[in-house]
Length: 163
Image 1: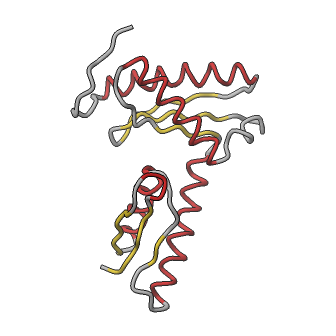
Image 2: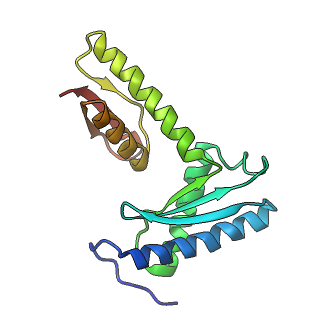
């Protein structure tokens, strides 16, 4: 096993592709253990490795719950880190769960915008993962508003206000 020292440098596309390969092997092993069929797709975008698992049947439905995907993603990141020696920002998608979560976050932002339209000076969203907060910041910016994250750890949340 070769390890790369932990540095502040952003990983190259080749390193991210290697992360994706390691992650895919790990996820494939988990699927085999659970006797679940799935097709894996690897991608590199925005400085992250993305691994998607899809299936033509309903076999992934039990794994596609957002909390389950988050837990599987953390386990997969740890497996990648164990092989590379580097923290991984890998994103795992199971059965389209990321798209479903994107739509849920858009609805949360829309509800917060409605509170602003009703006269609130700001609107807070529930605590969520760093990846979800990043998605929220992007959605908010697309709607011409501003957002900031507040809090620590599991309590970190996003607050939205007008520009």
